[in-house]
Length: 477
Image 1 (cartoon, rainbow, N blue to C red):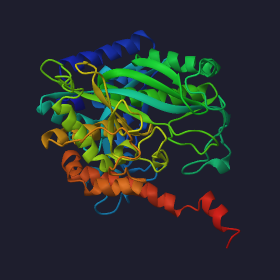
Image 2 (cartoon, rainbow, N blue to C red; image 1 turned 90 degrees about the vertical axis):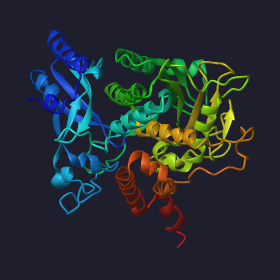
Image 3 (cartoon, one colour; image 1 turned 180 degrees about the vertical axis):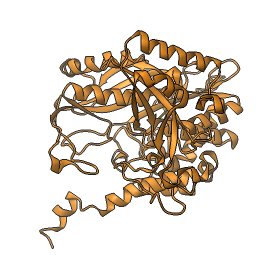
Image 4 (spheres, helix red, strand yellow; image 1 turned 180 degrees about the horizontal axis):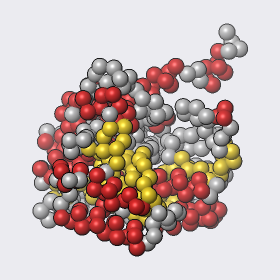
């Protein structure tokens, strides 16, 4: 009996889709199948099997070591895995035991840039068939189940900014190998600050067309491609989808962009603020609304001339009330906090406004507009989409449950008296640690695990002697 059958992990529709995947692999002459699992950082990990082994992989999944769940952003394991209590005290993870990544047949794609390759997104399970509670995709599914229990669906839309550079030197000399390695040397593709100018778009058109064909070949709901404010900075936007499909879109899009760019001599980076002269910070604006499950109606739509319904206002109140803790998920890197600056079209405090780009949460639409939504402008483009969306939903639902009042909209967002956003990742993690709502929603074990991984990154950062310190003190003292 297969892993799927033993634990009842697929319904009739999923079993039929799995069979369709096997038939397509045979009919289209696909040689290999990538099984990809999104880790705690929103990075795809996995294994590649030959086509002859695809049917077994779909039935039984593929074993992965549980140390994958314990790594920080340098791929260092943040726990001593062979000590007593290793792996967060979970017996299933002690001694670097295996867990199983099981493909989702509905996610199957053929990669346009590698047509010999099929691709499947996977979910994580322990050997006894239980979902791994530390899995980010499982955490979003848990948040969506909570919303469904309250009668809501969750719709999100994506705006992702990132940088595109020409790759000059990939830094592959042995001395560049490290943990992490030396970053590549790059050159700009556009110069100066030319927000939405057609001439700059035309200059980047050759590489943007390469990316567009790849993205559309994956059937991702691409909406627009834009020239952003800074040199070599672009933005891609996507149509609204249900949150799980939207998060899957982000995961596959980021991976596809980096792979395709590299194959053509470019380097794409979703790092918020690269340390490259004159470049600008990149953000991730997350549009969100709740729908009524029984008929799909947008419950954020206001009545009687109001832009937002009471449900939307309370949801918004939850986002503002928990903004400092939520930053740990929307901005989970040390670098992302370089973006929170006043008068910069990025937020620096927990305020909202109506069509105001300086606030943290921007309300969009018109009274009675079915597309009424909230746009949270706080995120960085490297955030894990599953955890970002799950945290927004949990904190918004808390706002509804406790009828939290967001207060009046801010017309002067950088002067309004409001709680400041965390100044750094440490502050955000401390706020998350103290947040009982997050502990209950995600599970206290999950929060402790997440905190340890991120604090391991901070410890490595603080142990380094920075260029600023060298310049500031080496000659002076």
